[in-house]
Each structure stands twice: as C-alpha cells, then as structure tokens.
Length: 389
Image 1: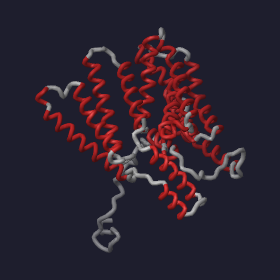
Image 2: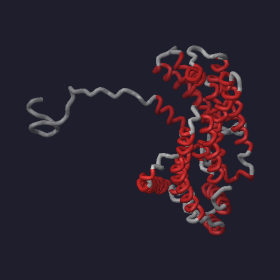
Image 3: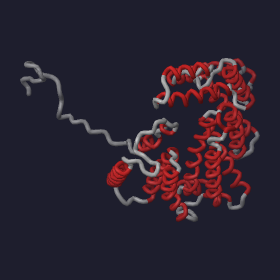
Image 4: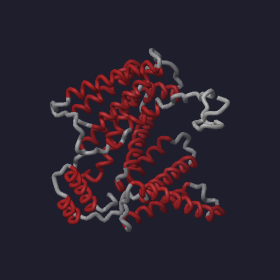
C-alpha cells in the first residue's frame, strides 16, 4: 500500500490540526511545542522553494544519467525498443523507493521528480510497445495501461498529479471501450460519461472522511475537482460538436442539441447551488469556472453583443450581486457568513478561475507609442530645457 511511514503521516495530520488551533488562539505556543515533541515526524520535507530546486536538480541528474546509459547501450541497437524505456523506468522507480523508504523523503522534490520521470518512461514504453505490435489505433489499450500504471502509483504514493492523470485516463479508457463495444456508442457516449463522472465525484465525496482513505485525502480532493470538470465537459455543446466533427465527420448542429445547450448553460448554476447548499468551496469554484466556459461556448456560436459591452454588463451584474450578498451576510444567517474562514483550504490555494479569466481576456492591445513626446536633452538650465525648445 502507501510507501510512506503511516505513523509519521498520522503525526503530520495531528500537527496540522494543532497548528490551526495555535493560529486560532485555542492553545499556547508552549503547548504546541510540547505536542510536536511528543509526536515527532521524521520526514524530510523542505519548503516550497527548496522543493522546486530539488525537483529541477533531480530531473537534470536523471536526464544526464539516462542519457549516459543510452550512449553506452547505443551500439546494441536497443535504445529505441520499449524494453529500454521500461528498464530506465525501473531504475527511476527503484531510486524513488530508495529515497522514500531509505532516506524518508516526503514531498521533497526528489521523490516528486523520480515519480514523474518513472511514470513518463513507463508511458513512453507502453506507447512504443503498442506501436511496434501494429495494433492500428491503440488509444484503448494505451489509456487502459496508463490507468493501471497511475492507479498503482496513486495507491503507493498518493500524489495529486498522478491521481489527476489516473482519473483522466480512466475516463478515456471508458470512452474508448464504450464506442468500441456499444452500437451507436459515439451518440450515447456523452450520457455514459456524465454517469461515470458523477459516480467518481460521488465516491470521492462519500469516502472523503472514511478512515480507510485518510492517507489519500488530497487525492480525493483532486477527484472532486476532475469529476465535476469531466461531468460538465461531457455535456458541453462545443465539446460534443467538436468530437462529432472529428470522429464522425458530421458538421453542423448535433443531435439532441437543445439538451446539450441546456446542460452547458444550466450545469454551472446547479454546481454553484450545490456548492452553497453543501458549503463546498470546491464546487463553488468549479461552478465559477463552468460559468466562464459557458460564456465562451455561447460566444463561440452567438455574437449578440460586442465583447467589451458584454464584459461590462457582466461586471456590473456581478458587482451588484456581490454587494447585495455582503450586505445580507454582515449578520450571519442560516449558517453562512461573510467573515474570513479560520482554515485555509486546499482549494483556496488554487486560484484557477482567476487564472482562466486573466488568460482569456489578457490579450489587450498595447498602447501606441507617442513619438511627438520625447523627454531629455537640453543645453542649459536643467530640467530638459534647451534653446531649441
């Protein structure tokens, strides 16, 4: 199962809870120090800057090491075979197990890099193996093999990025299986994908606080992000029409178009409503991202207003709505408040919707240079004055 020391993981969770109580003023600094001494954590977990540096350094070392081995084995004409990539992947995975179990690395950057490199090498090996066997289109077996690989790595290391890849490859595997074995599978695939994504999200929510999954809390958070995203993408009109054009060569409106338009525009509101009802920050933020996606989808097919007018109206409506909510919640009502939360959640660190909005509307034209206004020069008197003024 999980590679990390379970006792230290439990102590680490305890320390996080105690630290929150210290920040809220429920315990003193002396009590906090006493608790941390009684429940030690032996992991090597540097700060984020050292972690990034160690990640880059490990990638460089592994690149040189794998390159040197490939040069030494180049005369044997084996470095282009899938077995060579499996060999390099096993070397990286062996180093990962050694650093985790022998040196107690935990989210140090070294284990992150070795996990990333070994996963990529195994995936490349799978791709070459399927291409060598001339299976034709091999998306189905490739997605299945990557799913099994990342599932094993997720169970072993509980990494969030690997969990996201595992979930996406699982959806891809389901999609290719469905369109292969079910007649008219491509027409019904969106509804099957909606059901699969909703099931993944439901399972992630159900086992979020289960004792058996306590070491995989961050992985379950990732599933609660990827699940709603896949649920919305499965019924988004633009996605459906693009897939129909690419895979069925059908241009123009898609079948059940009104259903997908209702899904595209209504799903963000449903997601936000469930987020408010269940007090889920993840659903709220996913709902905001879906609102952006719905607006972009609508704008792709219909041009009712110019972009600047549409953005101005949307901004005015949002400002008015936020002002009304702030005024209403100055006094807490029905379990909701305007006050800042005491606890910083993982989702609070992911300003995804801000990044999307910034990237979407950040292509503003640069101000033209005014060549008639030039500063500097001057022959006397300072301040840039000159006889030629």
